[in-house]
Every structure is written in C-alpha cells, then in structure tokens.
Amino acid sequence: MQQQFESIFDKGGDLIGISHLTKNNLDAIFDLTRSLKHEEISAREQRRVLEGKTLAMIFEKPSLRTRVSFETGIFQLGGQAINLQPMDIQLGKRETIADAARNLERFVDIIMARTFAHRTVTELAKYADIPVINGLSDLEHPCQALADFQTVLEHKGRLEGLKMAFLGDGNNVSQSLMLLAAKVGTHFSLGCPEGYDPDASTLTQAKADARTTGSIIEVVNDPIEAVRDADVVVTDVWASMGMEEEAAEREKIFAPFQVNSALMSHAKPDAIFEHCLPAHRGSEVTDEVIDSPQSVVFDEAENRLYVQKAVMMILGS
Ligand code: CP
Ligand code: NVA
Image 1 (cartoon, helix red, strand yellow):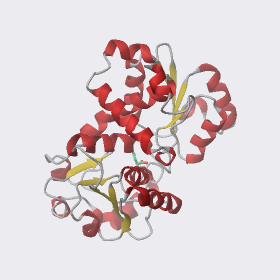
Image 2 (cartoon, protein in one colour):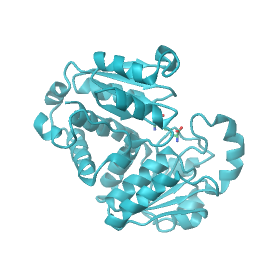
Image 3 (tube, rainbow, N blue to C red):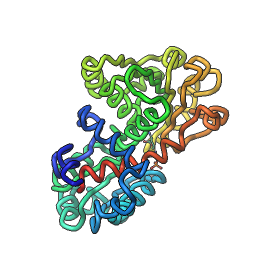
C-alpha cells in the first residue's frame, strides 16, 4: 500500500497550495479520499498507515474544522497530534521560523500550519525536511478546496464542464477554488465588489491552467452575472481572520453579493450551495439558503476529514 502512495508525490513532499498540484495528484487524492470514506481500506488497515507518527499542528488563528479533522484524522491513521497555539511557539517572535522548523523536524513527522502570511508556510517547508501542509494562509486554503471539490464530485458525479460561482471576497478560499477549478476543467466565475479581486498572479496561473483544460475563469463585479446558470454556488465570510477592523465597512460594500434565495434563483435549479464555514448568517448567506436542501455545507466539513487523511497518507507514509 505504501509504495502506491509514494509514487504519487515525492516522499517528503508538501501541500503548500493547489497551485503546486498536478491533475494526476488531484485524481489520486480524490480516489483515495473516496476509498477512505467508503472504508475500502478497513479501519484496521488504516490504523497501520501512520502508526507511531506525530503531526504538529501550528495555529496562528482560531479553528474548529481544521483542528478537529486533522487531529481525528491522524488518530484514525494510527498516529497522534500535538496542538500548538500562538502562545506556545510564537513563530517568528521567540525564534526564527527556520529554527522552529529545524527543531520540529527532529521531533515530529508532519507539520500542518495555519498562518497569517503565506510565506510562513513556505519558510516552514523550506527548512523542515518533513511534509508541511497548509491549513490556511492569507493566499490559499488548499485542504478546503480539495474537500469542496470532493463534495461537488459526490453530488454532481463529475467536475469537468460544471460552473462554480464564488460570491464575495477574492480571498484565500476563492483562490484555492479557482486554481483547482482550472486544473480539473470546471468553469469558475468570481463575483466580487471592485477592488476585492483575487491575487493577480494566482488569477494569471489559473487562466494559464484553464487553457489546457478548457475551463473559463472570470472575475466579474455583477453578482447575478457570476451566479447565472451555475451548478455550484459558493461563498465565504466577507472579512477573513485578521481583517476584523474592516468588518463593518465590508458589510456595506459586500451587501449586494449576499447569497439569498433571489440570487440563487439565477443559478441552475439543481445547483448546490457551498460554504467552508464558519458562516456569518444574515451577512454573506441567509438562513433560507444555508439551511435549504441545496446546501451541502456539512458534507464539505465532513470531507475535510477524508481529504486530509488522504493527503497525510500520501505525504507521510
Ligand atoms: N473551514 C475551516 O477551515 O474551518 P476552521 O476555521 O474552523 O478550521
Ligand atoms: N477566508 C476565511 C476562511 C475561514 C475558514 C478566513 O481566512 O478567515
């Protein structure tokens, strides 16, 4: 079993962002995720995969889903997790990121990091000779995008040729989704207020990848245009962690991009609704949408567990 996983990524590889993954990597992750979810690999067999291994989880920001799904996941694979909160290691303050990485690699087998600056994750990966997984940075949230596309696969049976519309801020979640859409041939329309566009180089990369898969990647400022005929409608908080002081101003600017029943009526009638959670009900999404039969938000949360187990198996075994 181990051999099979090692051939997918280089041993000691990292998951820094979707931008680094190939279509083959993505197919391998989705296949393994499905096998884990349907217990094609028995629970007993799973417990041997990372037996005795330790995952260090570094958090510079709060978390429910990432912390619980990673900790549960490594436990189910036979390993254990250490939860490191900001006060524990004070990354970059008490000692350099490079020195923290060079210490951690002597103790643990995998690092998962949730950081403010994306550069913190890349620095950890540069200096730690063990797999580093991005558990959300200001640039990307790759584990979330993998779980979201796994959820689309489950509900729609395919990814190619579908249209995903993301409403709101051109943030970390939207950027990972856009990159993944481009790699698997899903059309992606980001509807955001002017000035809240995604990162320019991420958009350029997504458009370049899209040329090989035929997906259309666009950024528009009209929420109805973004959502028109979409198969998947996605949103996220308007002010990400660390932007709390902008929250009141953003509430006003983003109001036309709220996902409510009126906006959903422009998507396909069988469109599904996704949100990475936590949701600010009454802001970016109304109760009637997030609690509707079209909403698959808790499937996405559940799939974080299986997708991350797949990633840890591939990178860490
Ligand atoms: N979606 C997500 O990453 O949730 P947490 O912030 O709770 O980990
Ligand atoms: N964009 C959000 C995602 C939270 C899971 C944030 O960065 O806070």
